[in-house]
Amino acid sequence: MSNYWNNQLMLPAPELIETMTGSNVLIGTLLFNPVKLILDNQSTVSIVISISFDGGTTLIQWHTFPAGEALILDEDLYSFPKGTSFYGNGASGDFSVSYCYLKQ
Image (cartoon, rainbow, N blue to C red; front, side, top):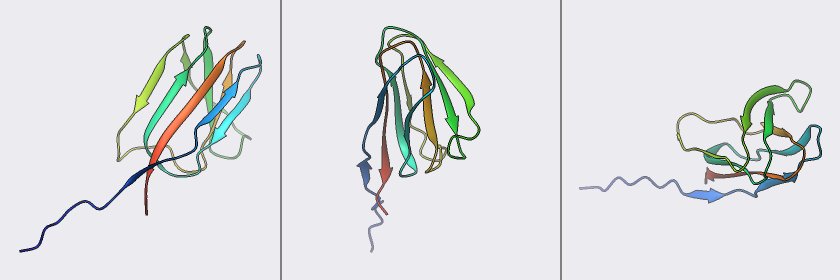
């Protein structure tokens, strides 16, 4: 009898983090297809997050994060694709995108 185990290993990707300046700031671009994603407004002001799937030519305003809000997306089957770029616009403070991906 054979054992069937899920041999997929989840690895951490480098954190994407930037300080807001009052205009659109590139927080970073996903290097891998994420399976777990944490978006974290580490500031004391609201930050508007926009997403681009074409290298920044087209920005889609996605979500306004109130001060201190974090959002965890952990749906393994539905995710932003590798190459997605995150932009933030806020008066000050840092915004972070942390994620894990599956080892191939």
